[in-house]
Length: 200
Image 1 (cartoon, helix red, strand yellow):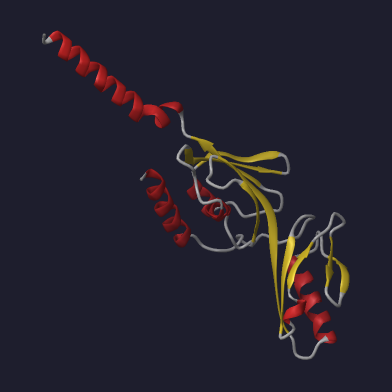
Image 2 (image 1 turned 180 degrees about the vertical axis):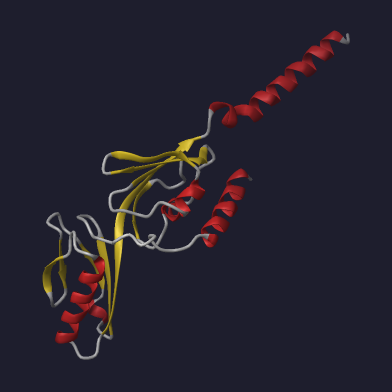
């Protein structure tokens, strides 16, 4: 029940959140992907990885340096190049950043996400917090440094955009929060036993 309520509240917060990376300049890094769609040449469409040198190899066009460049510059150059090679193509390119979602989530792992998705959305991709997870205690590690610690997931809808290599950790709820129903149940049972014995 708690998981369903968490998921519902989280989904509502996501729907209310503004999309976009708050004006941050989008750049690609090794491990990222470019989702390429070429119409009507569907055979040219697919995921184009960015290698350790920051180079992406596109069908027909070959290798191109994309790492560290502004995404708008990369996108415009690739579209212009395809238009020189193909007749009236419709080109769509979407950058996908590689991040990790870890800790007390239902599906921890590595995810490729669109930069327009807020960091909170990445937690949604991992199917939200597990029964032991606390969405009021999220930690964000970027470039080996803790960027945010013990913040509620709602904050990630406002002031945290996705960057390549980000690591998100959903912390576990405290011991009392996780075990209070069992402890309270045990205390009630113990009190009931004491009262029963005393009444004899």
